[in-house]
Image 1 (cartoon, rainbow, N blue to C red):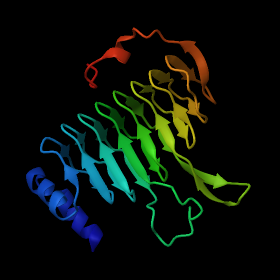
Image 2 (image 1 turned 90 degrees about the horizontal axis):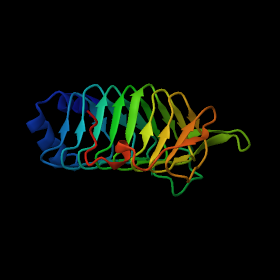
Image 3 (image 1 turned 180 degrees about the horizontal axis):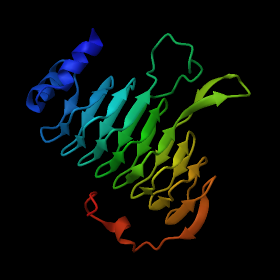
Image 4 (image 1 turned 90 degrees about the vertical axis):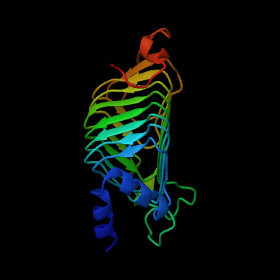
Length: 222
């Protein structure tokens, strides 16, 4: 029944859908925020001024999604999680796990990406998850313990993440960095102003701090 209700709400005109999401789902949605024809039903949703979610996205089984000012999720993205507080044995050993997506001000997720928020994914301000078909995967099987395990992903401010990358749980991309197309990020890095590339990704070259992408005042790039 809940799925049927969600589907009905999904296709309603935005002015009516926004009112229902605020009143009955207890979502915090700014007057200027917008959700298109998308099945977006985390336990808690917060959308800041000018934040938007386009058409044909799915976001389910998350504790929370928080979208900052003027942030955007474009089209056809699959965003999933594994909520806490259930009776499932999956991830029961991780008492402090949070199934959440946090997208910073002026940041964007483009099209056809798979975002696995079994554990927390934090994306900073003015960052672009660009291109198509990238995978951000926070969970996997721990072969030594013989169970599912998860670790958070952190992507900093003013990052550019190229098309068709894989970002694994426990990894971190520093602010003011580029992750090249097709790369696999599988560890924490700290050095800013770098191009990280390869399988696995390593620091390949420096990027000067005067690069205009790192100094823009608006997230959208013309």
